[in-house]
Length: 376
Image (cartoon, rainbow, N blue to C red; front, top):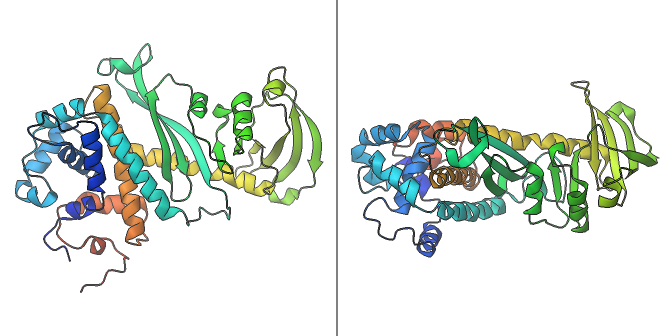
């Protein structure tokens, strides 16, 4: 019944520690380390994420107040902010990046049968990015503009379970559309993105890879209508057309036909125009896919508000990237626990409960209201 373990320790038990240790060995992460191993660093940073600690001092004070429980959290020593700061600056961020990717693979397998509101056989992704503003004086390595620094978090979100399947961290100067160059495209998958990613040459590359894309058209897109399908205007669909691009460059970059759908949102009255290379799905489904893209926005909002990625515990590039990747790991870990324990609560609710109960000693499933926990 885990009566001797804190909720935090039980949560950490869901992590594949053997995999983590193999990654650490591969990167020589614990070489010359006398205290606070990479595993301890991960535990402390995960604790900081889950309990909304704002600074290294905040982490130190909080853990010092519970010093008698550190052993039951899996920690063998008191945590000093200077030691943690050194670990964040020195331990290779790639360790946490690789481990997060392993967790992502595990989580996606758990959510593969889930639905996101649309009955589709295709794997559907939302591609988006968020910019994390930084102080230029403290983060000069991440120069974004003349007066500030920033890092960008580019994420490809699997809409089944809202699991990030691809994360790329760059400086703030990287243009969003260039991320399409490093994506490993999945034939048959649908990629939904904002019009900031509209690039005819890159879209044609996706088309040739047998992947589908959906985005909003820009107002200055030059095109001609080839064919118009019959539509039910009462559903909000104004037109469903087959079009050809006519711009000097665009017609060369994308020489085949595209599908253009004009939709009037009955709730806002706003008219939206979509472009896609998918001619099979109903027009209403294409429109619904773009609306589902907002789940990606919710992921970024969740990352910014509920994981400590906006208040960094270190100023170096290594410290910032380590913290972001650990934040992603914590997000995915909570998603894994939610699925394995069959919890009905949202990720937001689970996180709120964990933030005030991590030191409690009770079976993990019992901590969440509405669970099917039965005492044995």
